[in-house]
Image (tube, rainbow over all chains, first blue to last red):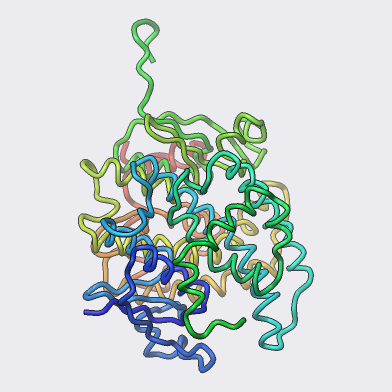
Length: 217
Length: 238
């Protein structure tokens, strides 16, 4: 039975899941396209599967699951014996992976999502861009990047010297902010952060995600 | 602690304040798992009605928790922060005794992760502004902003409708077992209902009401409240 990802490939949260699958050398999944433009994610049919009206959700045999970071954890555990070890090697590695995954969810995601919305999606939909929000959220993100700069001067990746789910979780939104909103300066000005982003974007999983149809360039 | 003889350090240490939302999550989990811990009182809000300490801004704390927040958790194997990461670690490490807060199999664990993410991504952002303005504002001698409170509560009600629908199907959020996902909701929800007077949002949804009354009456939660707010709550099980 095929692993189904319901969403759309270029979306930040769907992308997170796809990159995790690629890291685990899983390529025979099926993307079931959800038409956001037509509001399919708010249809009664969709809401039965994901009551918050958000993408992605997955169907894998008798497992049905939503929330991209929960799905990523599921993928990391299900395919633990193949591909990149996304939780490191030891229990302490796994604990730090969870820690930095929560840091992404609680500290990085908020500001970067607001910036990507205002700088990439709002102009696309002809919606007004909120300059006050952009200024405030940029300041917040820069403060987080200062912490990352310090951390990444101590270890190659966030949880340690190994690429983990924590780093992975950052990839799609960071791509949007740097490559679509052209806000790379705040990353480039911090040498360890800059090197870390270069590592992330060099990964084959990221390249495979970018090569999927639907991305706006 | 004995006056003489060998000092045996407790198994783990938590830095934070017991009345703080995030530290509460960790303390609750340790209590549920009956894990011995030591609390180092740190109040990152900088204003505490019992102890004033600015240790969280000092470089030696920031070296451990670079965001300057609490809780910070330490045991013989790890030093870590972020409450939802800590509680996953504790639940997994001590799975062999106490309630199975992470479920008993892969499928249950997956559901716990999903609903813990729901709490983090959907519930928390809706309830936090309301509690800040309805409860914490007064603690700092300020008045809450109704322009923040009302949209926050409206957003929360939409989430509560979804919870109501889920709780018609399962006794707790991740299934028919109490888990980290339910536990994570306790601190903010308690304040909204019992300190901000917004209990009607929950009592008017019968399955949500039953769920709340169940998790709120867990002996560990009542014990924790009595210890965290000794001037307000007592432990009815004592």
